[in-house]
Image 1 (cartoon, one colour):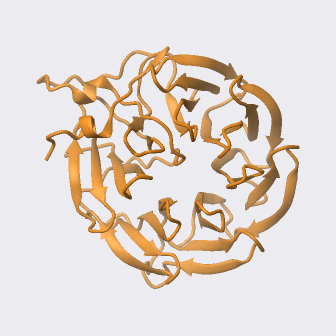
Image 2 (spheres, helix red, strand yellow):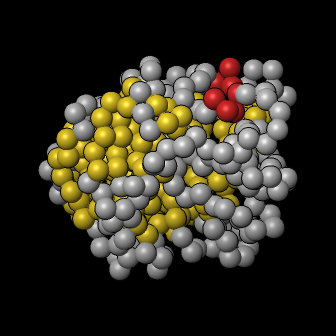
Length: 348
């Protein structure tokens, strides 16, 4: 099963293929013809711009209202695996498979700094609430850690989160209030470590009593109120999406079941009502997947859309939760835009 570990969680606008909304019969399972493929998405907090990191090493800025390409730069030498806007909207950070993190001035998309790491892959990026610090997580390098960078100078700050995992960071997220960082290793035993951002100390390990054999947590994300953490992972025969109470350090709910999440590759949490949107890459062995909208409190599915297209891997919500984004382009110059209500209108 394909496991997607390139996704974006910061809010923005939504882009979705029109083919998803088509009711035409037959198997029209082809992506629109484009010269690039989007790897990750990030959206400005004002909802006016969307940034994409692409497989060809380019970084693109798109107009949220029209979906048209505004500006594009290609300085990475390999796939751009992570991308994130700062909270103040002035800086964009991109991380690639070329062992670099690049800081860009917005809106001109002018490269301001190149931050080099000893490992090859950047697995996670997150800005502090005041936009002064960038956190990065890396994979497959000699010094596995969550690093901190001064955004103004591009200088690495003292390492405070030393992750005990030889193969590096599996996934990472910073709580909305900036107080807690959650991380998991690429080859650990299914636990999530919670860190106090202020002093760098580990404050909890989630999952020791839940997962009893070797496994991985493939995705994790804090809810907008910073009080809950959603994780997806587990052994292959019993993978689960769990909701954790951060203060009590225990799971409080399960979303979906093994069958409904078999092909899950990514998820994102709505900033509006804490709905969870998941992307499956396979549905009953068909070459296309499904979008499902879940209620975070009850764990029940509120809607499902099965696209007549090969696959989608990344999703994101707009700041107000009204729009939903995927990584599919209409063509090289245009991204699709759709309202969440329209996408799931009259869908069981």
